[in-house]
Length: 104
Image (tube, rainbow, N blue to C red):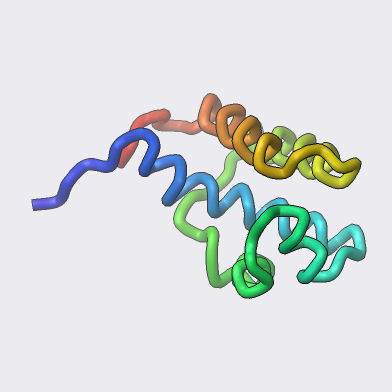
């Protein structure tokens, strides 16, 4: 019997990794190295490597309403805003535009 995910599990296991993947890739595009990105996002270098190389963050497909929200918070992180607060607010904003807005 397959158990249903709670809303929080859905966000943390499906949506958040996709957000972090987009954030990591955008930060790489600005010239940041993986070590610096890991520090900025509060993650390990290994996690950043997996996001950048498409080995993590592939379970949820972001839509066109969600991507600008993530881009906004990447800019906030780049100017020194708290990455944990930025990721949390980003997750809330992205979840509002989830097609199902319910756990699978």
